[in-house]
Length: 129
Image (cartoon, rainbow, N blue to C red; front, side):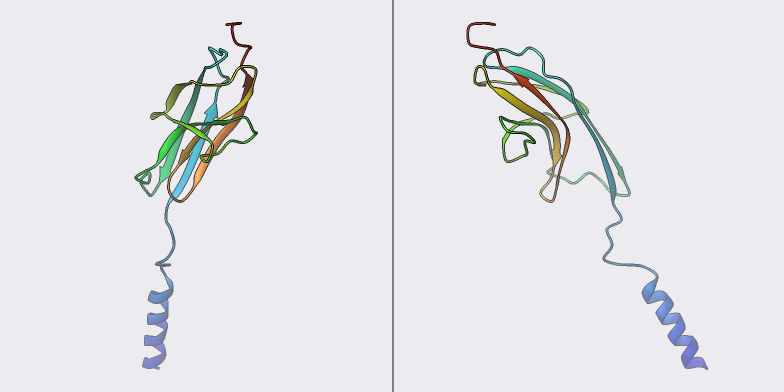
């Protein structure tokens, strides 16, 4: 009887906590605003990045800002402009005239990337600014 009681107690303690579980619960809210000040070779981006992180800190080394490209759904493997804060903005330079671009806000660390909504714009012809 004592052996059964001890086994039940040991099983109860050994199964009560999952040592390998990640207790972090992060939620990200990313919003990309429409591009402004669009010229043949530049445009201004703005957006909001809100991070709600329960039970864990934001991982060190996280980067945030904007990703953009001439193809839909740009990622951190495309053009990146870093911008810190919750209300962010930056200017993209050296764009090509008469070209459509796609932009998203992002936050990423070495493990994962999160993206906001995608916006698009087209730069005007050179000399029409």
